[in-house]
Length: 164
Image 1 (cartoon, rainbow, N blue to C red):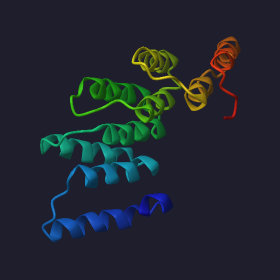
Image 2: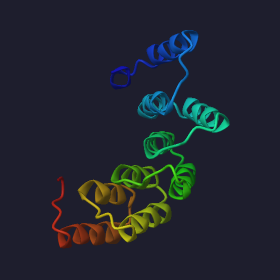
Image 3: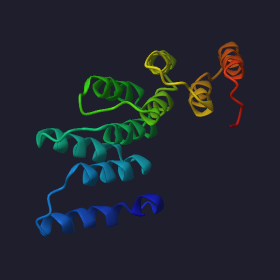
Image 4: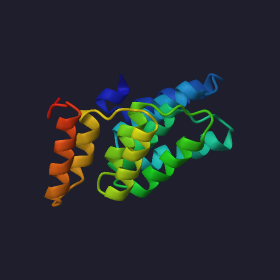
């Protein structure tokens, strides 16, 4: 709930209260923290939590990676988003789902080669793109109108409605 209203200070206080009570953070706790940070554009804080998780030997799952990648997108760090996505692809604890592909494509939209790479992986991994996926790709076309029109045509070929 705190994530929805941007109450970052409340979340940090809850984390401190948990630690003071001797409750060790687990993957769910860290995922919640990363989600709040991602939604609020707290890229530096999310990076610190990620580093802490790695130092503790925590398993980084697709929910953690998705939250981190979202933070990269908000911080306009497409190369870091792509690096995290590549780590997720090779992580045995991470099951790539539609959300991680779409979030990475969105985060990399300003760097089209990266977004196209993730899109290609998504399709080759057997996951069908939807209107949101195409919307993220199109948003990065900037002034490349022929490319945007090609993507719109591809959407229609796949029977996806614009604005779906």
